[in-house]
Length: 320
Image (cartoon, rainbow, N blue to C red):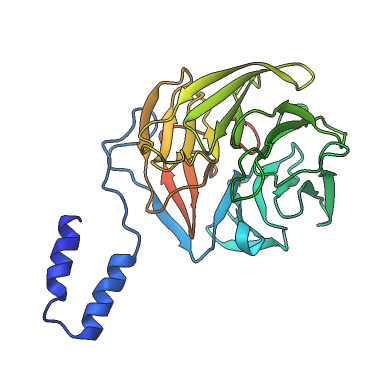
């Protein structure tokens, strides 16, 4: 119990039931972490994530746009939102079939990992939705989660399956070459693959695991396949016996990784050295750089959308 909670708890005594209820309601609100000392090159001292808007159900899938805006998902109500550069939030797609991760093509078309519909889809310029893949022949997708587009227009995506986790149920990381409907299996051995990204040069694929603290790296081949899978980094401060909660991740233009976990958004440099943790009032599920200068890190965190101004800049490419 914090000192403030002890103080408020003492103040409850002797108050009316109505006053006590109001104080208890205040205690139930999310409390921001104390201002940190900062992260060199990433976060100025005292900078903490601020709430942009709450009232959502489970926010996810943020991706920045060329004009400085941000798309994000609300999975459990099957909606996709757009935060415009002026700060207005509006629904841009409903009935998304539980769309989670979002990505953008080089032409600015929005892609969706539709967990409930078990497909990767694309919103065309006229607003219609096209199915890009439902999985390899005879092996339908379980519940695709996150995705990213490479420089050739191919799509890497994870398919960990739905919750609850079923022991022994297979999980997959796929690559969908541009212009095809049949994805290539990249890895079927990560216990629960979730967030993924590509390094700035596009030569390395990074994939995290919601169950465990190991984050993996793979060498990308010219055809989009990968080889040389290896442990790349170990997440920090994961409570013993707990899932890592490793979920969405982002990369900045200097190659630093930002990974959402149960302990906050953990930041590592391009050499996998831990730099620090960014903590919002709620546990983050995904992150993305956006804004006209790509120096705002947005965090989708349960019922809220948060942001923090950074010293670092997001990647100089469309989307994540």
